[in-house]
Image (cartoon, rainbow, N blue to C red):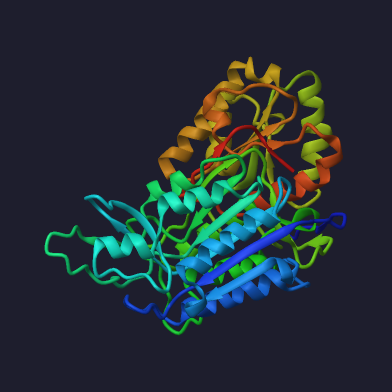
Amino acid sequence: MKNLTPLTTTMPTMSSTHALVVGIANYQKIKSLPEAVLKDAKDIYEILISPQHCAYPSDNVQLLLDAKATQTALLQALAKLAERSNHNSTVLIYISSHGGQIKSGSYAGEYLLPIDTNCTSEVLLAQTAISGTQFTEALRAIPSQKLVVVFDCCHSGGIGQPKDADASEINTGLPESYYDALKQGRGRVILASSRSSEQSYILPGAVNSLFTQHLLDGLRGKVIGPGGVIRILDLFSYLQPKVTKDWPQQHPILKAEIEENFPIALYMGGKATTPLPTTSPNDVYEYDVFISYLAKDADKTWVRKTLLPSLESKGLKVAIDSRFPLGVPLITSMERAIQQSRYTLVILSPNYLESNYGEFENLAAQHLGLEESKYRLIPIMREECTPRLGLRILFLLDMTDDDEFDTNMERLIYQLLQSPAGRDGELNSKKSVNN
């Protein structure tokens, strides 16, 4: 257990932020949801417009609760987002409601269910709900390349069954294939409260759903905020393990097509100092991190003169080849270091990719992560290069820009002091994650 020195960053700026927040509990012709659904939406709305937190302009955030969340109103609100946002806007859509799917037949597909949805027949449901195609088209009309859609829709309880004698069953919840379709397009992130095979829970005595409670906590300052902003992948990295720890039967998922880990909100209104954890997690690892790098030329100089001192100055315990015991085979020491470290950093450069030892180290770390179903390998791009596919599909931290070194170090140190996340998120990243 170690004390850590806090890091500071400069004040951020974010412009053109927009949001739509929807909460539907008391349906007209469908089984109701818990009142916590409305509380979730109200609290998300309040945190978004709070100057001390996310600091979205209140005029740019629309809240639709129960009777106001009709099919017409929802489609108009989505069209309004498309009209008011631009290429550089940040757009957040939060939906807590029923979702449903018709398994087969002429109206097979997924549907968001507004307050006035009528499910007494498949025809009426298709006419009064918002189909997956309609919602996808509405999202495509939004020009923003920083768009996040948050679903807290898979609540327990049915939505009622149609009275048609030959009608297909209408199932509650939304499948992951629905989220896959919605994420299509540059800069799109879909964050859902649970897998399609699970329900989203409200714990006994809680005023918010489990998922939204941790989402709110993150936006209130518990997620890391380097540079005074909360970035979408950092928010998910905080949220996912918290939910599953509190209720192992629920696993939030993330689907994305993004080129950067973009900001979704200000951190504490743009506060310049981010509180880092004060100690390492209470886990089995002897080291916080093992550094895999090419121990020659520029790579060696950067790791030993820049990266290593920066990590150790914050109290992290680092395993590195220069400290391996004498008289022990190098490969044996590498294996031990990977096993005994919470994370392995892979320092990528053209020369590293040609190194046989480097290939062995990152393959060993990835294999160990697969065995444990945890992400324990973090690639760092020190110099522009094209790593193999097994590394490109991971979240890469781009440290090729010296001007961003302090901000990137803050993100890195924060991650190294978190327990490794399970493999429940999905990211389709087209290049390394910046900042």
